[in-house]
View 1 (cartoon, rainbow, N blue to C red):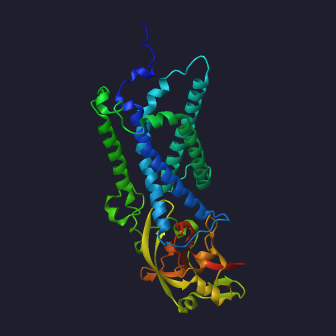
View 2: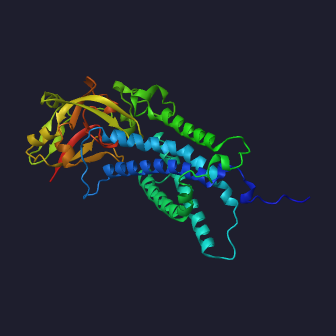
View 3: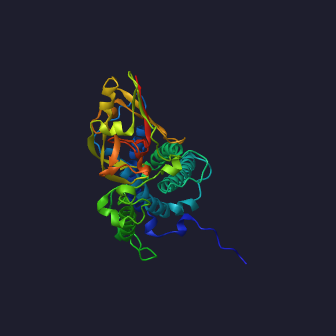
Length: 383
């Protein structure tokens, strides 16, 4: 029995595999990847700020917007990537030119860049989505790996674009040669316009089904969002509970310390007796969800003044949490001096719940939730 000949690129004559289709979907995917990369870069630098990069504390909701866009663009990129791969997979069956030539070298470079690009993007999107579920079934650190993969993707994408630039330019705009009427109908009956609508619809659907975790208007539709923003103690979700952090509460001997030019010590009742301020600020989590809340407490800049520290001081925040990556955080000068930055004692009209950081926590504008340190018992002024 004679085996059928292996498929070749010409075995896939459908116009849905035309370079024009790949170019259009590639534009959409490139937009999603660019937004995801830039917002992810911003989030990374907020958590690991270089000394040369000033990070503003305003607009207060900036991180809420950028991280919501980061997660949304990453989720939307999934159907776009699948569609892009489907349009170009017949290229896998193309035979490289022989004998070796400049064209053969370009083909090998193109395939290598595609292999790196697809592998890195698939892994990046997978671990990013799993991170939103707070599930880490791997031994490597998520944030550093996610950051490194982003740069690998950018590098592979630039190589791929450089190799394919002539083809992209030729198919960037619709011409008589690339118009649907000039090509044979798709075997499936699906037109190119129908494919575009299907892909755009799928991307829009997964976007709407997840954006509600950071856009309250879409909250009831957020079926793909692992966190519902208004569900949790005091109307606010909890990522890391007090039990997980090893915090069981405080006793009558608990003291809050400020280590500065003057060392100050306060009981919880003494903290409550200090002048209180209010801030309307969101908790914006790296997993993409955010929720606005009303906070009451003492301004950090007022505490700095009480201990005799300069207004433009950096502050190290120390939690009662036992271990963990975020048991301490640092407030740069702009954040410590901002009048919205509080040592919060109350949330939404009530005393902080233990899972939200009782007896005291940090709340500051334009900060990732992991840096809004909970269960605070000491501030250290850094000169």
